[in-house]
Image (cartoon, rainbow over all chains, first blue to last red; front, side, top):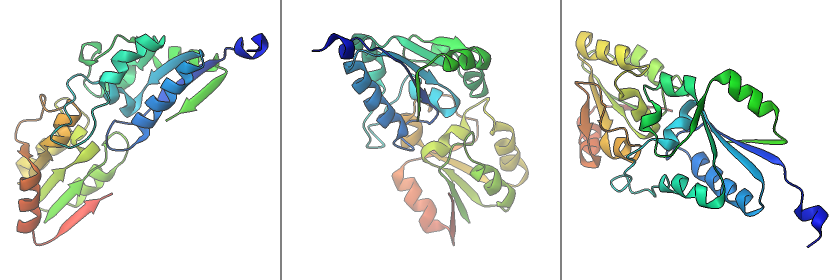
Length: 126
Length: 101
């Protein structure tokens, strides 16, 4: 393949603001994130507002008859997606701490998150 | 009367509106993303406890939806868990139902 094309790496940020299961946004976001990983891009995932619920430990969807996609977050490391950021203010408002989450994340303030968002080439919101 | 709320209290004001209009003796059932309201220490705890105590409103949550979201362990005292059968019973036993979308 042409080196000029394959060598283009952009900074992609996926901003997740919805809870899982109630709407399809969270699952769709994860699908797009996995696709972007196949193109060797610089990917960051942000979880804020109700999006932090996507990473809550102990999801058991059998009784509700839905697919539990939360284990996929643990597999992201295998796709070289290791930049997961959670907004501190959103966690606190929901009575959650870093210990309630099923993967290792970096917790940061809104201000820090805003700085990081400004540095991206592409921001995609779910 | 049965009031059903299926939206997160952080994202919409459905529960707030519902609580404002729920009369004494009625029932509020939280389903889907609405179940995030019954977490201890959450934004809706104070208002829900107040309704249960002062207006004798029964607050229920659909446990399969709590379980799916990993939120079944830290539920406000006094909130009743119902399964799908219990959901049907609540609807059947109520003269009318309002779904707050």
